Length: 220
Length: 220
DNA sequence: TTTGTCAAGATCGTTGAACAATATTTCAAC
DNA sequence: GTTGAAATATTGTTCAACGATCTTGACAAA
Image 1 (tube, each protein chain N blue to C red):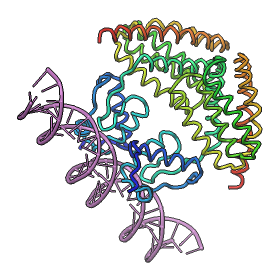
Image 2 (cartoon, rainbow over the protein chains, first blue to last red):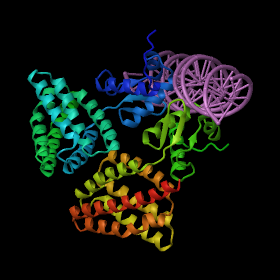
Image 3 (spheres, rainbow over the protein chains, first blue to last red):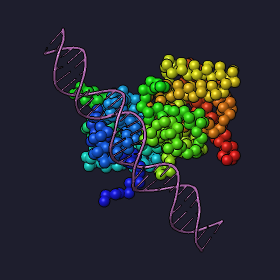
């Protein structure tokens, strides 16, 4: 029938699928995710689903309350601030020790150009996506698999927060040029300045997001 | 009968117990961990055990091979080096931005004194444990819950590597005085120098561990 | 109307058994 | 001793069951 290859274990596939539902906003923050309902909807057993839930709970995307079920995490200002503390440490640290010819630098440059192209086409979704790729590339400068994996989780959590906000133009567009400056600094072998610039970027970005959050909180 | 409180879900309790077995060396790296055998030994169902396995696999303590089972991760030189890259970034970054009166500084100082006391009593196990607490306190300077959690996982992985080595005196004892210097620098409001010193510490520590690893690898 | 109690219903937590899919081992044949 | 195929063991996944816990709603008391 529809038996695709899908060599992944069911739990991992589930985790991936649910993660993308969360990031895409298909599942709203705070929403309850019932085991019975979901296992039926996704045609898997409750047990397999529970394995996936454990993974996503550990990633911070889902929240688990004993005997009550799992809920989509609702990002708070505190969690946004925590995430930005992490980003400042990791991204600035990775930049500060970056080497001009590291492969990730090319990825950074490419992400910037992609973002610009999307901006010219008014594709703000694309701009946001390219922006995420830029920062992932920055972390990749550190050459650490564990750091990359950790950052991927952090980024997913952040995207959950973005979903609450909408208006990706205002969120991402102003930062394309800052990203450009940062890559350029690295390309010119000035890592310390790049790190400093990234610090400013993150401070600004955090402020924008917290501001947007305030409004949402007021509205609710 | 023996129904203790143990309010934790079974999977979480299992993960905790198995983690401590791994860290204590009760389970050898490379060893196979059979679902059937373990679920019987720990008196839990296979399903619950699998949930715990997923957690520990994500933490990097166990390794999962499709249709073959889970195995205790065997630390490699590559993983040690990766972990030290992470540590350099996080610990030095946390120190560089540390504030003299941060609560974690007291924890750092306390860890150093505890380590010295254990050293005087030739309790090298205790020295190692205090050393771990010192570095956890350093990370705590960053005030990030996510970073603390991430570092806890990294530390557990590292301890898995230590288990392969033995000889905790040689591994930890030489570093007590360096830790002391680092706290003192922070207490005197010189974070940049503390970060620099930590960088030296980590470079040295990494070298010692890799050296010990070489011998083990040769022996095997 | 408000509050408190209690039973009914829903959902989670955990277990045990079952069976298909995949590895591993055994062992006969060459 | 190699090869190949059957027998065995283990994992992957599902299902059904049942106690524990939470939620709901009815109903009585104030």
